[in-house]
Image (cartoon, rainbow, N blue to C red):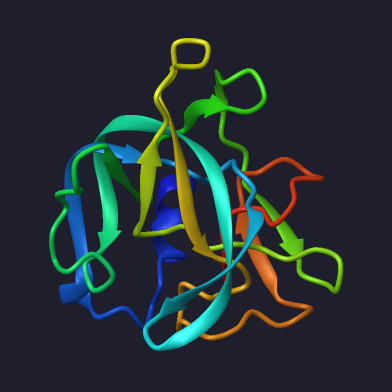
Length: 173
């Protein structure tokens, strides 16, 4: 049931042809937060504050937005795409031990935002932490994966990041 709910929350305005199934390495940022980098990132012609999330690299099937990835699951050398997955557990900060992914709803406010890391490139980190390959992923803060618009205060967002995580990665609905 959880997997069906999460798949139902995938961006409705993304054309069916833009959704791709990838198989291989990907970063899963579902339980991560994003730290502002001080830079701006452009998504489909709109500028947003850029955030960096540290995410575990997994291997398997994942769902991608092909429009943001030029229609290819292949990442450049030493990079990986941050994608969506229906796994129920994954390595999580701060120890990077495997733990269940627990979805929760948050409401954005002046003090609590969200970030979108879906289908953006990540840099693989050189060293493993607790045996886990990590990646530094860069994506927009307060950008909607539904329509690429700005996420306003008072918007409901689903995330697997724990309470207190700054700019948790998630999607609005």
